[in-house]
Amino acid sequence: MTTIALSLPSVRRPRQVLSWFGVAPFFLFALLFLILPTLNIVVGAFRNPEGQVTLENLGKLLSPSIRSAFWISIELSLLTAVLGCLFGFLIAAAITLGGLPRPLRNAILTFSGVASNFAGVPLAFAFIATLGRLGFVTMLLRQWFGINLYGSGFNIVSFLGLALTYLYFQIPLMVLIITPALEGLRREWREAAESLGASGAQYWRMVALPVLWPSLLGTLALLFANAFGAVATAIALTGSSLSIAPIVLFAQIRGDVLNDPHLGYAIAFAMIVLTAIANGIYILLRMRAERWLK
Amino acid sequence: MTGKQLWSWLAVAFAGLYFLLPLVGMFDFSMRMQRGVYSFEAYRIVLADPQFQQTFGYSIALALLTIVLGILLVVPTAYFVRLRFPSLRPAIEFITLLPLVIPPIVIVFGYIRIYNTSSVLPLTGSWWGTNILLLCGYAVLSLPYMYRSVDTGLRTIDIASLTEAAQSLGAGWVRILAVVILPNVFVSVLSGAFLTFAIVIGEYVFAALLNVNSFGPYMVWMGGNRAYEPSALAVVAFVITWACMGLIQLFTRFSKFSTARR
Image 1 (cartoon, helix red, strand yellow):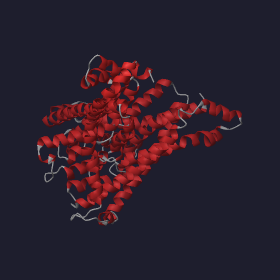
Image 2 (tube, rainbow over the protein chains, first blue to last red; image 1 turned 60 degrees about the vertical axis):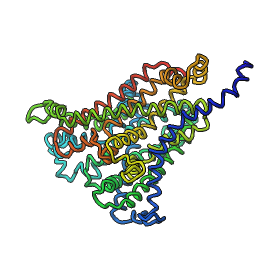
Image 3 (cartoon, one colour; image 1 turned 180 degrees about the vertical axis):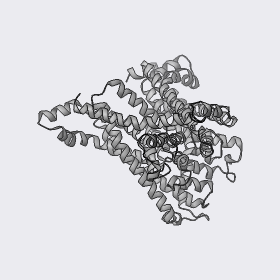
Image 4 (tube, one colour; image 1 turned 90 degrees about the vertical axis):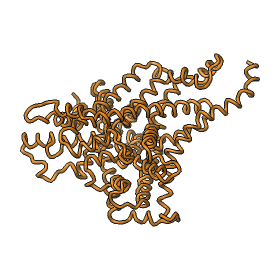
């Protein structure tokens, strides 16, 4: 043992240097392809084309068209986050507490893993094939029930259609995140509450929900950010007919519409701020939630 | 059956309807290219399309390269951080979470501004440069998944003892990482790799904005110009996603080591 202890100081120095070579590529990579590009956008949002510091670009965000694009985006993200949380919670509660057979629970969790990753272009195609003008459900409703979906004003290329599509990856994400939290509710808590005379509703209101609310709110924030950053699904579904913030930025980068790079910086900066706030809330609340789920 | 069970079955039934109908619709639509009969005509046309073969092959190659780059970046970093620099952990975890916080469209916008043709490093100007940029972008997107799965894998093995044992037998760092550490976290690496594959194969925003004709932009182009083929493509993409997730489940279930020791 003593020989090892004695030999350590002489060995440590070259080792330490070598270890830095092990982590240096990662930091260099992160700097070049993640941090610098993002900083470039953030700094650009506060500069005018001549390179002077200005708030003018951010001021342009308040123009009616940009403001409404952000507003629709926020509404869409918030709506799908709230509904995703609600339905995801119901499904998770059904499979954890509802006394359903175990294989069904596992099947639903596996499917949730797939569906939460089945976003983007193919998902949009699936919904067009289902609820589009000639879609499967559209035709089914007309032939079997005589309901003319498109006659009643529905269109898959709309706010409602986009929300329905987003829910397809929002709900499974909620199921995946909230199921462990629900499984972390201990049977003893329920028994203790019951032995003190609490009803089922009282147990939920005074024991389960106070334990769960950081997870619930945190996941709400995560789902918001998840929907807000989704671009491909929206583009494949609507082309560019629905003007939401990421689509406006996409068109801006391509130079289709406005061709003012500094306005693009400002839109991108505002998107970072919104998703950063949402993710920050998620991370903070998840740390709070983990106290109870050990 | 209790009331609770009844409600649970109802909830699951409604969910099943919502989640299965689009899949059924997609499949049904993809089979209806020939009037009056179900056929695989749309699939035949898609599979025979040289554009499909080219873009799909390209995206598969890119996904595999992304996985290799991700492993080369993440495994040594996670290893050295656990072994030598535990104080760097929060910084690394923060960096690996950033791609989930910053929308991908913003990251690629940054690339276009920094690496455009009038910059110091004009990557977007050449074919090779654009491909390298896209590869690095995808590696960034995969960081959160790769890092988390590799780090979880490293937690389950005693890397300090393994390293000392290997060193006492005369192994150098590269050899330790490649022959000792990597095989021990292979299952974790694989689950990160399959997730990366599922994300990269149909990615649209990065490819479209860097003007690369990969599978994602090809699908969008098809969606704008054809009726039945897009559904066939969606079925193909869904099968790939399903296969990747299924393989992850399969590997984690059959790896006794990663779950037994905690």
